[in-house]
Length: 142
Image (cartoon, rainbow, N blue to C red; front, side):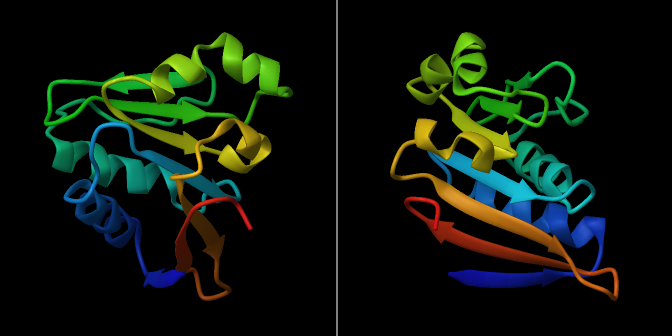
């Protein structure tokens, strides 16, 4: 498990930017953490580095945003408002997972059984001093 400390939203976006150099078609990035922990900031950096010029926002109410036009399509999900695995499947999750781009899922730990074994997990946590702890691991959620 790799751990990074981010002292600002900009540093969190830089971490996402760096991740873009390593992602490839079919990758799944699962983001876990409380509200305001930096998940969407990470996606902003990732999308920009992949070449999307879109303004990245959390898909809390729309459930999914698609960012295309870059090196790879980026499919940004938010499971916060979903209650069941069936709801996640009804928005086409399985089709996106088997698709041509990269899937990034906020609140992914709600339905970890739906995600492939090669999923990259990111845990975002607040520190008392305002910084964020970001831990990265791969494989099944532990």
